Each structure stands twice: as C-alpha cells, then as structure tokens.
Image (cartoon, rainbow, N blue to C red; front, side):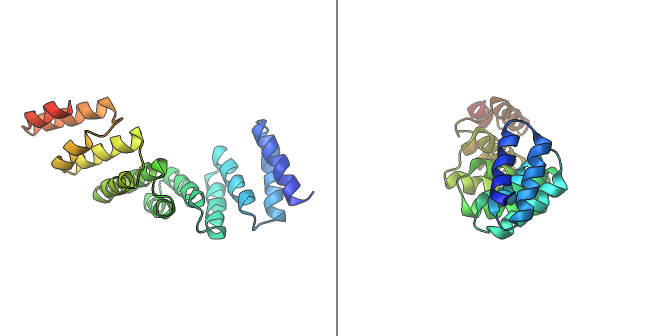
Length: 192
C-alpha cells in the first residue's frame, strides 16, 4: 500500500476509534514516507493519545526537525515533555512555538506552566505578560498570570492583572485573602 493511502486509511480508522488499526496504518505511512510531516505528526498525536509518550516525543521531535517553522510541531513536543516531567525542555519547545505564533493562548499557558514547574516563576509571569500583550487571551492564561504575579509578590501588577477578563473567581478570592494577610485591605477589596 502506498504511504498516502495508508495515511488516509489510518486517519479514517482513528476517527472510527479503531486505534490499533490506525496505529498500524500510520506507522506504515511513516515507514513509507518518513519525511512527510503530516504522517509523522499525526502518528505522534496518536501515540500521545494512547499514552505512549516516548514514541510520541520521538515523532514530535522528528516533526520539529522536518518543519522548524511549524508552531504545532514544537507545541506538541512541549506538551509531551511536560507530561514526562521534563519542564525545562518543554518550556524551550513551547517558547519556539510561541515565537512562531505569539497569540496562541494554550501554548502561552503551557509555556508558563512549564517554566513555573521548573521554578522559574518570574520568567513564567513574563511569558504570560508577553503573550497577553501579543493578543493571547483565555481564562486559564489570565488566571495563571495573576497567580504567578501574586506568588512573586508583584503586587502592583497583581492588582492590574486582577482586572483582566475571565480570571477565575476562586483565584481572585485567594489573592484577596493573601492581600488581607499582607495588611492591604483596600487592595483586597478591589480584587474581591
């Protein structure tokens, strides 16, 4: 079977939930056309869905090599690295994706989370701030930004971030309580 036919049948099997068949066909497609980005990337996505992280990472690393200017390839690689607990490597892959697509809010959130998970809290909030400035917007990103600013004791920025739309009320409440503990009741009242 030709690689493109194996790929098409593999994607159809995946859509039907026939994961073993889909995996076999996508592996066949990659074996037949190892330089085809969609074959490699989608096999990585299927491996990821199935919990085969090492295989998924291998595919996504290969996809990033095949298409260094494709933000999704770097984003998928970063996502798998995060799940593997390799946060510094994840933040590097996700930063590459963000450089190519600065307003992608999910990627900005993942990048900031990976930075925070590796203890780089200041870099994490700066990542959020840059992405928000570039047009990324989501409740998750806004809430994470607020949380990181407060954790880093950037209180003036925290008060500004509390005004962002869609910040989760529970986070606003936690920040308000934290401000009360710091004897900043007027600021706490603004946030809560």
